[in-house]
Image (cartoon, rainbow, N blue to C red):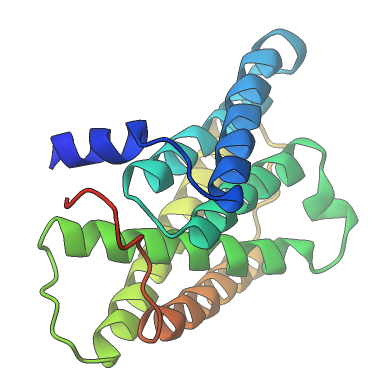
Length: 195
């Protein structure tokens, strides 16, 4: 499995979308490095959380459109936190939770399938159920991270009961939509290294 992840990572981009995805990945890496010297440590920590997602989407050999969606979504989600869009734009928080959880649930489907945690059944319901479950789990973990940050790091993190439940509902809805799409469309490139 490690060898195939590495093979997907080192595969040169072949399409315009793959080049764009790699450029966005490079911007994420440079952005985190610059933030170390220009932003508070908490903002750097938030931005650095994008790196595993942008690199994993490349390593998994996701389709170029999904790869780009993952990269852009996690960068927008983290950047929105750094520039405080979640408090200033009404509804932005819920929209980002839905989209970000949806693309991460799609990534989780690929990881679970590749690692043989779920068996490919050929049934259209499987990705819907698994993606929704993974999305709700990811939403719960994210809300725990927010709570931990608020409780032990800084009280500037916005945490209320309504916000937490609303974020989880939005995330679950985004994951459900990702599952429906995954039940109809392939998530990985046809020429990717077998994982």
